[in-house]
Picture: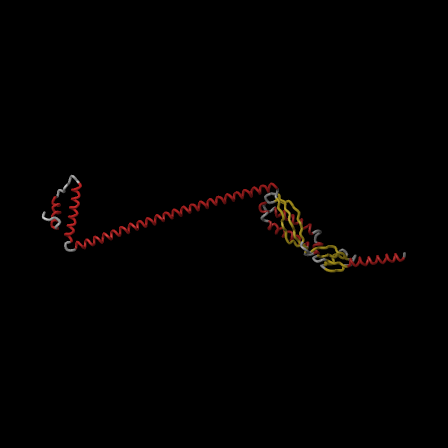
Length: 309
């Protein structure tokens, strides 16, 4: 009996030693911070590594991770500036930068950050219209980050970013938006078609205009060429006539030239008179027969008619 009791006491002492030893030595993982209190008052902050804590006197009151935390913000109803109710959810990213403030500055910094991001989200959505909620996501995210980060500074928490996941309007609004999109597409299609027709008409008009210009240019060139040809012909004839007249005048100026001219005139007159008399049954003679006599005299003097007056 005494031996069993001694074993039991020894086992109890050994268990007490191991318990005290393991409660005395604490190992803090990497990227974590433990808050140690002594008699209920903040004592120190333990970083990563091996630490010794006095049991009963000291205890680990809070354990914080220093990694960036991803917090899902549940969907919430928001009303836009144009009084349309939408459901919005998002994701909040934050990290603890001051473990002491995160322990004693607020009861639950995660819950507080979620609530603050939701209220800020409702406020930001209420400032814009429904059509702009999708295009203004970056602005909304930045405003939420700024608001939550300023409010969470006394909590020792740093809000890095906020991202909107989905913005869901009511079904009726979705149907109207779809109809609006279809109408816009039809409008753009009609505009493109009309612009195509206008371009085609413009191109056709330009082609006809250019064709008319080319035709008129061709006619102009043809007329100019014809006029130049006629002018060249007239100029050539005139030059030839002038040269012939010059030769005639030179011939007349020679001795016997005047008699030759008179003879040529008389010959032509007689030939024409003979043609008239032969082709007509009735002959009309000039009243001044002396003119005929003068012709015959000229012919006789020139030797054309021999032996008569």
